[in-house]
Every structure is written in structure tokens, then in C-alpha cells.
Length: 281
Image (cartoon, rainbow, N blue to C red; front, side, top):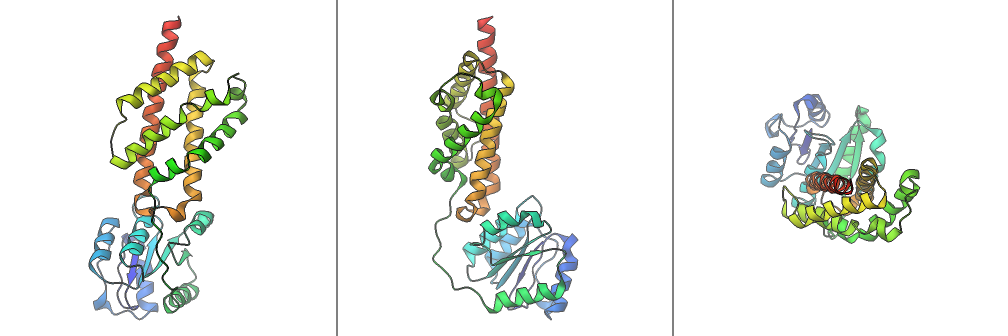
């Protein structure tokens, strides 16, 4: 659901299964039925509405059609109409940590099922006491975050790898463990920046060489997979810690590109490992 109110008179909401919530807002805030926006629409329609009409308040469900896509609507409102109050509505209290991290882009968040009087008081209070606008900091894409956090990503990944008993038992230097990381991260960032659907030939060749190196160093295929899984974990953690700096409208698509690139590089690393094993035999 995305609900937008203008002077507590206009309502826009998406995702029909939460229409009862929209009705609640209409009744509790004495909203004029003639001023209401369209019903049962999703993220794309919400973005179009934000770009065509002026609003004072946005209430976006955390998950409208896809997981976390409410952030897309919030981010768009903050860019297009920064004076509007924005709320995230969620039924998952355990998501509290991540929501706290994006306090800079939302005025507050509401838990559902909400206590109606408390809900209305919170909305009215935020609308009546809006925070003064602050100069916007440039928001970052996932690709930029990965490149500027390369050192942090490398250190954390190396720490996790060395804590894994089987991987730590392989007698190679730290340099040999991390030599491939810069090229892996550079390729993931490249795919995000140009919205490519495949890795470059150079990246595929580098991934195959990495697999061959791991074969000679005493790895097996499950350990190569574990290393990649740990890298994905580190990337997700770094992203979560930096959500307040991110362009939330692009995060989901960017992370999908990162995942696709990582999986393709893993595939070619395994091919390289198998090729080396065949040649050794």
C-alpha cells in the first residue's frame, strides 16, 4: 500500500488488500471522498502520481508488490517533493534495525496492525510538526558503495574466510586469498553502472583463472562456493550499514545485478577448477 494525503484531504493508495487501511484514514481524518486518488495501484502508478500531483504526506507499505519496494516510493517522494512527510508501514517489528538506518529518508515508521488512535495521532503530529528541510546529500548507487568500500569488504571477507575451519586449513598467504577480490567487485560494479546482463570476456577469463588457481592451492568446489557466499554476505551487510546514504529507488535492481554477476563469476570459477583438474589427471 502507498497512501498519499494532501492537506489531509487527498488519499492515494496501492495494493487493494490494504484498502481497509485507506478507509480508516478517510474516516479518522475526515477526508473528502471527491479528493481521493485512484485505488489498487502499484509502485509504477505511485511514482507517476508523485510526479503529477502535489502531496503533503506519504504512507508507503514496506512491501507493495515486491520485497522492500516501498523504499522506492519513499525515495521518489523525497527527491520530487522533499517537503512531504513520509512514513513506512510494516508488519515486521524485527525489521526495526534496518528502518532505523533510513531515518534520514523517512519521518517515521508505523507498525501494523496499528492502534488506531495512536496511528492518527502520530500522523497528525508529524504533519503539523514537520522537520525543517536539510540540504540533500548525493545518494549513492550500490556500485559506488562497493568501490569506495573495497578495503572494508576485503578485510571483513578475509576475516570470515579465516574463521572457516576448512578454508583456514589451506596453507596460503592472505595475499593469495584476496588477489581475486578487486576484479570480482569491479565487474559487479560495472554491471550495475551500465545495466548489463552479462559479464565481460575479461571478467569470465579472470574467474576461470581464479578457479584454476584455487584447484592448485588445494581447494575443492564446495569451498569456492562458500567463499562466494561469504562475499555476498559481506556485501549485504555493508549495504545495510549504509542504507541512509543509498538511492533507495535503485537498491533492489542494483543488488539483483550484483547477485547475477556474482553467480556468473562463480560459474566460470568452477569451470576453471574443473578444467585444471582434468588437465592434472
